[in-house]
Length: 255
Image (cartoon, rainbow, N blue to C red; front, top):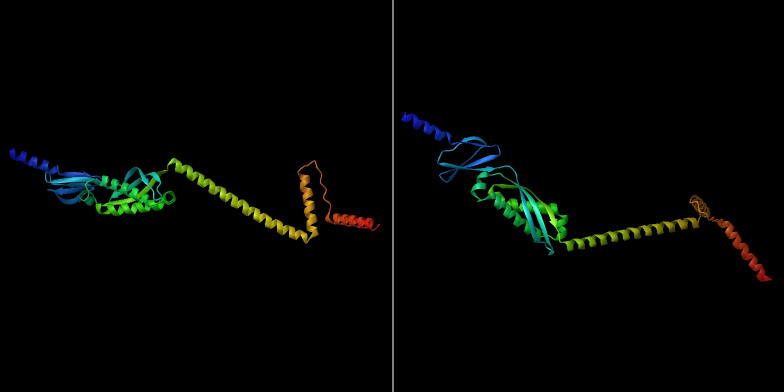
C-alpha cells in the first residue's frame, strides 16, 4: 500500500512537468539557473522542481510612443508622437540579454525619436516624414537586434507646431500663393500682348482682314441687345472722306 502511494506520488510529480504553449508562445527553460532550451509550441515536458520556464509572446506588438517635446535643427520647439511595431525573433536573447525588453524598446525608441528630430529642420520634419520614419526604424532595429527583437515599422503620428509658428507658416503660404498668381497674370498679359501685336501686324498688311474684324465687332454688339447703335464705316470710306476734306481745304486756301 505504501509502495503504491509512493508510486502514485511519483507519477503525479512527473505529470506536473507537462506544459502547453500556444502557437504564438515560446518557453525559455532554465535548469538550475542555466539556460536549457526553447520549448513550444504545443505540449512539452520540464523536470519538476529543477527546471523553470519563462514564456514570451512572439506576435507583433504595438507600442505608442508618448508625445515628446523636442527642438528641431532650426530651433523650433515641437511635440511629436509615434507608433512602433516590433516582434521577438529570438526568444532566448530577449529573456537573457535584456532585463525587460518591452521597457528597453520603448525607452530607446523615445530617445532615438528625440535625437532624430533634433537633426532635421521643421520643414524637413513636415515634408520628409517617410524618410525620417525609415531612418528611425533602422536606428532602433540596429540596437535591438542583439536582444532578439525585430523592429518592423515606425510611424510618426502627429507633429504639433506652436500657434505662433502656424500663423507664420500660414502667412508665408499666402504670400507664395499671391506671388504665383501675380506671375501667372503677368505671363498671361505678356502672351496676350504678343498675340495682339501679331494680329495688328496681320491686319495692317490685309485691309480685308481689318474689315472682317469690324463686321465681327458689329455682330457682337448686336448680340448684347445694346440700346446704343454704333456704326463702323469701312476704312475705304473713311480714307475717301479724309481725302475729300483735304482737297476742299486746299481749294479754299488757294482762293
